[in-house]
Image 1 (cartoon, rainbow, N blue to C red):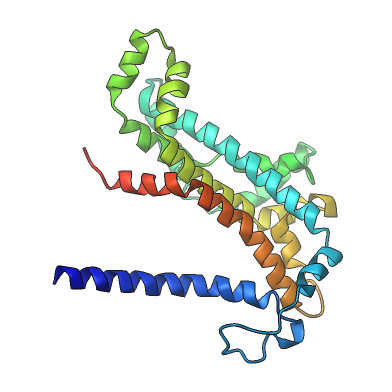
Image 2 (cartoon, one colour; image 1 turned 120 degrees about the vertical axis):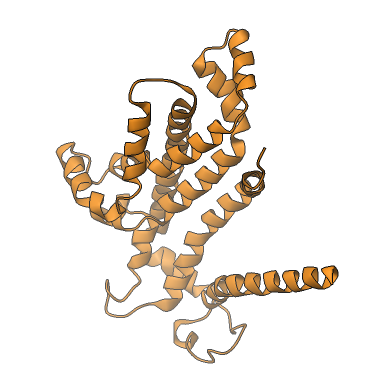
Length: 274
Protein backbone atom coordinates (compact mmCIF):
# COMPACT_ATOMS: atom_id res chain seq x y z
CA UNK A 1 0.00 0.00 0.00
CA UNK A 2 2.84 2.37 0.84
CA UNK A 3 4.55 1.69 -2.49
CA UNK A 4 1.26 2.33 -4.30
CA UNK A 5 0.94 5.73 -2.63
CA UNK A 6 4.50 6.58 -3.66
CA UNK A 7 3.80 5.59 -7.28
CA UNK A 8 0.56 7.59 -7.36
CA UNK A 9 2.35 10.56 -5.82
CA UNK A 10 5.05 10.45 -8.49
CA UNK A 11 2.44 10.14 -11.25
CA UNK A 12 0.60 13.19 -9.93
CA UNK A 13 3.86 15.16 -9.77
CA UNK A 14 4.75 14.10 -13.33
CA UNK A 15 1.34 15.23 -14.62
CA UNK A 16 1.71 18.58 -12.83
CA UNK A 17 5.21 18.99 -14.27
CA UNK A 18 3.96 18.23 -17.80
CA UNK A 19 1.08 20.69 -17.45
CA UNK A 20 3.55 23.41 -16.42
CA UNK A 21 6.28 22.59 -18.95
CA UNK A 22 4.03 22.15 -21.98
CA UNK A 23 3.18 25.88 -22.38
CA UNK A 24 6.90 26.68 -22.27
CA UNK A 25 7.66 23.95 -24.81
CA UNK A 26 4.84 25.21 -27.04
CA UNK A 27 6.17 28.78 -26.82
CA UNK A 28 9.67 27.68 -27.84
CA UNK A 29 8.36 25.49 -30.67
CA UNK A 30 5.97 28.13 -32.05
CA UNK A 31 8.71 30.77 -31.95
CA UNK A 32 10.35 28.85 -34.82
CA UNK A 33 7.13 28.61 -36.87
CA UNK A 34 6.31 31.16 -39.64
CA UNK A 35 3.65 33.73 -38.73
CA UNK A 36 1.11 32.48 -41.27
CA UNK A 37 1.27 28.90 -39.97
CA UNK A 38 1.15 29.44 -36.20
CA UNK A 39 -2.63 29.00 -35.92
CA UNK A 40 -2.88 26.16 -38.44
CA UNK A 41 -2.98 22.59 -37.10
CA UNK A 42 -3.38 23.92 -33.57
CA UNK A 43 -3.69 20.40 -32.14
CA UNK A 44 -0.13 19.46 -33.07
CA UNK A 45 2.33 18.88 -30.25
CA UNK A 46 5.29 19.66 -32.47
CA UNK A 47 4.87 22.15 -35.31
CA UNK A 48 6.83 22.04 -38.56
CA UNK A 49 8.43 23.46 -40.66
CA UNK A 50 10.80 25.38 -38.38
CA UNK A 51 12.60 28.62 -39.18
CA UNK A 52 14.77 31.16 -37.40
CA UNK A 53 13.23 34.07 -39.32
CA UNK A 54 11.19 35.21 -36.31
CA UNK A 55 14.36 35.70 -34.26
CA UNK A 56 16.04 37.54 -37.14
CA UNK A 57 13.02 39.83 -37.43
CA UNK A 58 13.11 40.59 -33.70
CA UNK A 59 16.71 41.81 -33.86
CA UNK A 60 15.99 43.80 -37.04
CA UNK A 61 12.79 45.54 -35.90
CA UNK A 62 13.77 46.57 -32.36
CA UNK A 63 17.12 47.24 -30.60
CA UNK A 64 16.79 43.98 -28.67
CA UNK A 65 20.38 43.92 -27.43
CA UNK A 66 19.89 47.38 -25.87
CA UNK A 67 16.64 46.33 -24.20
CA UNK A 68 18.28 43.13 -22.96
CA UNK A 69 21.29 44.92 -21.46
CA UNK A 70 19.03 47.51 -19.79
CA UNK A 71 16.95 44.76 -18.18
CA UNK A 72 20.07 42.87 -17.11
CA UNK A 73 21.67 45.96 -15.56
CA UNK A 74 18.50 47.04 -13.76
CA UNK A 75 17.60 43.56 -12.49
CA UNK A 76 21.15 42.75 -11.36
CA UNK A 77 21.74 46.00 -9.46
CA UNK A 78 18.23 45.92 -7.97
CA UNK A 79 18.72 42.34 -6.79
CA UNK A 80 22.14 43.01 -5.27
CA UNK A 81 20.97 46.21 -3.60
CA UNK A 82 17.78 44.77 -2.15
CA UNK A 83 19.54 41.66 -0.84
CA UNK A 84 22.16 43.75 0.99
CA UNK A 85 19.66 46.29 2.35
CA UNK A 86 17.07 43.69 3.36
CA UNK A 87 19.72 41.48 4.98
CA UNK A 88 21.17 44.31 7.06
CA UNK A 89 17.74 45.63 8.03
CA UNK A 90 16.47 42.15 8.86
CA UNK A 91 19.49 41.47 11.06
CA UNK A 92 19.05 44.81 12.84
CA UNK A 93 15.38 44.13 13.58
CA UNK A 94 16.17 40.58 14.73
CA UNK A 95 19.24 41.14 16.89
CA UNK A 96 19.76 44.81 17.75
CA UNK A 97 17.84 46.69 20.44
CA UNK A 98 17.03 50.28 19.54
CA UNK A 99 14.25 52.76 20.18
CA UNK A 100 10.98 52.23 18.27
CA UNK A 101 12.29 48.99 16.75
CA UNK A 102 8.97 47.17 16.87
CA UNK A 103 7.05 50.23 15.67
CA UNK A 104 9.33 50.67 12.67
CA UNK A 105 9.02 46.99 11.81
CA UNK A 106 5.23 47.25 12.03
CA UNK A 107 5.33 50.17 9.58
CA UNK A 108 7.41 48.05 7.20
CA UNK A 109 4.84 45.26 7.45
CA UNK A 110 2.04 47.72 6.69
CA UNK A 111 3.81 48.80 3.50
CA UNK A 112 3.44 45.22 2.26
CA UNK A 113 -0.34 45.70 2.28
CA UNK A 114 -0.20 48.67 -0.12
CA UNK A 115 -0.68 47.69 -3.79
CA UNK A 116 2.37 48.65 -5.89
CA UNK A 117 0.14 50.51 -8.36
CA UNK A 118 -0.73 53.04 -5.64
CA UNK A 119 2.90 54.12 -5.41
CA UNK A 120 3.44 54.71 -9.12
CA UNK A 121 2.15 58.31 -9.28
CA UNK A 122 3.98 59.66 -6.19
CA UNK A 123 7.14 57.83 -7.26
CA UNK A 124 6.88 59.34 -10.74
CA UNK A 125 6.56 62.87 -9.33
CA UNK A 126 9.49 62.21 -6.99
CA UNK A 127 11.68 61.05 -9.87
CA UNK A 128 10.63 64.05 -11.92
CA UNK A 129 11.54 66.46 -9.13
CA UNK A 130 14.92 64.76 -8.81
CA UNK A 131 15.40 65.00 -12.61
CA UNK A 132 15.83 61.24 -12.88
CA UNK A 133 13.21 60.48 -15.54
CA UNK A 134 14.58 58.26 -18.31
CA UNK A 135 17.63 57.20 -16.30
CA UNK A 136 18.91 54.01 -14.70
CA UNK A 137 18.46 55.60 -11.29
CA UNK A 138 14.70 55.91 -11.84
CA UNK A 139 14.50 52.26 -12.89
CA UNK A 140 16.61 50.97 -9.99
CA UNK A 141 15.98 53.08 -6.89
CA UNK A 142 12.31 52.13 -6.21
CA UNK A 143 13.22 48.45 -6.32
CA UNK A 144 16.01 48.61 -3.76
CA UNK A 145 13.63 48.66 -0.81
CA UNK A 146 10.98 46.06 -0.05
CA UNK A 147 9.12 45.07 3.10
CA UNK A 148 8.92 41.42 2.03
CA UNK A 149 12.69 41.05 1.93
CA UNK A 150 13.16 42.66 5.33
CA UNK A 151 10.46 40.44 6.84
CA UNK A 152 11.96 37.29 5.28
CA UNK A 153 15.49 38.04 6.47
CA UNK A 154 14.34 39.04 9.97
CA UNK A 155 12.46 35.78 10.43
CA UNK A 156 15.50 33.80 9.37
CA UNK A 157 17.91 35.65 11.64
CA UNK A 158 15.54 35.18 14.59
CA UNK A 159 16.03 31.45 14.18
CA UNK A 160 19.83 31.56 14.31
CA UNK A 161 21.41 30.35 17.58
CA UNK A 162 22.55 33.29 19.69
CA UNK A 163 25.54 31.29 20.89
CA UNK A 164 27.29 31.93 17.58
CA UNK A 165 26.98 35.69 17.97
CA UNK A 166 28.02 35.60 21.60
CA UNK A 167 31.14 33.65 20.63
CA UNK A 168 31.89 36.28 17.98
CA UNK A 169 31.55 39.06 20.58
CA UNK A 170 33.97 37.23 22.86
CA UNK A 171 36.44 37.14 19.97
CA UNK A 172 36.13 40.91 19.63
CA UNK A 173 33.76 41.18 16.65
CA UNK A 174 31.53 44.23 16.41
CA UNK A 175 27.93 43.97 15.05
CA UNK A 176 29.06 44.59 11.46
CA UNK A 177 31.74 41.90 11.61
CA UNK A 178 29.31 39.50 13.27
CA UNK A 179 26.78 40.13 10.52
CA UNK A 180 29.15 39.75 7.55
CA UNK A 181 31.29 36.93 8.97
CA UNK A 182 28.73 34.85 10.88
CA UNK A 183 25.09 35.66 10.14
CA UNK A 184 25.17 36.41 6.40
CA UNK A 185 27.13 33.28 5.35
CA UNK A 186 24.68 31.13 7.32
CA UNK A 187 21.77 32.86 5.57
CA UNK A 188 22.85 31.91 2.04
CA UNK A 189 19.73 29.75 1.37
CA UNK A 190 17.28 32.55 2.23
CA UNK A 191 19.51 35.13 0.51
CA UNK A 192 19.40 33.05 -2.68
CA UNK A 193 15.63 32.74 -2.38
CA UNK A 194 15.22 36.50 -1.96
CA UNK A 195 17.62 37.11 -4.86
CA UNK A 196 15.60 34.85 -7.17
CA UNK A 197 12.30 36.52 -6.23
CA UNK A 198 13.77 40.00 -6.61
CA UNK A 199 15.47 39.29 -9.95
CA UNK A 200 12.34 37.75 -11.45
CA UNK A 201 10.16 40.62 -10.21
CA UNK A 202 12.56 43.27 -11.53
CA UNK A 203 13.12 41.46 -14.83
CA UNK A 204 9.39 41.10 -15.47
CA UNK A 205 8.51 44.66 -14.40
CA UNK A 206 6.54 46.40 -17.15
CA UNK A 207 4.42 49.27 -15.82
CA UNK A 208 7.15 51.25 -14.04
CA UNK A 209 9.74 51.08 -16.89
CA UNK A 210 6.99 52.00 -19.37
CA UNK A 211 6.07 55.12 -17.38
CA UNK A 212 9.50 56.32 -16.34
CA UNK A 213 11.38 55.86 -19.66
CA UNK A 214 10.96 57.88 -22.84
CA UNK A 215 13.84 56.96 -25.14
CA UNK A 216 14.64 53.75 -26.99
CA UNK A 217 18.00 53.56 -25.25
CA UNK A 218 16.45 53.23 -21.78
CA UNK A 219 13.61 50.80 -22.44
CA UNK A 220 13.70 47.35 -20.85
CA UNK A 221 12.89 44.02 -22.44
CA UNK A 222 9.24 43.69 -21.27
CA UNK A 223 8.50 47.13 -22.74
CA UNK A 224 10.16 46.10 -25.98
CA UNK A 225 8.14 42.90 -25.97
CA UNK A 226 4.90 44.91 -25.92
CA UNK A 227 5.85 46.55 -29.22
CA UNK A 228 4.84 43.37 -31.05
CA UNK A 229 1.31 43.39 -29.60
CA UNK A 230 -1.64 44.78 -31.50
CA UNK A 231 -2.19 47.71 -29.14
CA UNK A 232 1.14 49.17 -30.30
CA UNK A 233 0.72 48.39 -34.02
CA UNK A 234 -1.98 47.42 -36.53
CA UNK A 235 -1.47 43.67 -36.24
CA UNK A 236 0.10 41.36 -33.69
CA UNK A 237 3.23 39.61 -34.98
CA UNK A 238 2.83 36.38 -33.05
CA UNK A 239 6.01 34.75 -34.31
CA UNK A 240 8.18 37.69 -33.28
CA UNK A 241 6.24 38.04 -30.03
CA UNK A 242 6.91 34.40 -29.14
CA UNK A 243 10.58 34.67 -30.12
CA UNK A 244 11.01 37.72 -27.93
CA UNK A 245 9.17 35.92 -25.09
CA UNK A 246 11.66 33.04 -25.29
CA UNK A 247 14.56 35.47 -25.07
CA UNK A 248 12.88 37.16 -22.07
CA UNK A 249 12.46 33.84 -20.30
CA UNK A 250 15.98 32.44 -20.65
CA UNK A 251 17.72 34.70 -18.07
CA UNK A 252 15.03 33.97 -15.48
CA UNK A 253 15.43 30.22 -16.02
CA UNK A 254 19.20 30.62 -15.78
CA UNK A 255 19.01 32.52 -12.49
CA UNK A 256 16.71 29.89 -11.01
CA UNK A 257 19.01 27.05 -12.07
CA UNK A 258 22.00 28.84 -10.52
CA UNK A 259 20.18 29.37 -7.22
CA UNK A 260 18.16 26.14 -7.26
CA UNK A 261 20.37 24.37 -4.71
CA UNK A 262 20.05 27.14 -2.12
CA UNK A 263 16.37 27.69 -2.94
CA UNK A 264 15.52 24.03 -2.28
CA UNK A 265 17.62 24.03 0.90
CA UNK A 266 15.66 27.06 2.13
CA UNK A 267 12.37 25.25 1.53
CA UNK A 268 13.63 22.13 3.33
CA UNK A 269 14.96 24.13 6.27
CA UNK A 270 11.64 25.98 6.52
CA UNK A 271 9.95 22.72 7.38
CA UNK A 272 12.35 21.87 10.22
CA UNK A 273 11.57 23.15 13.68
CA UNK A 274 14.02 22.87 16.54
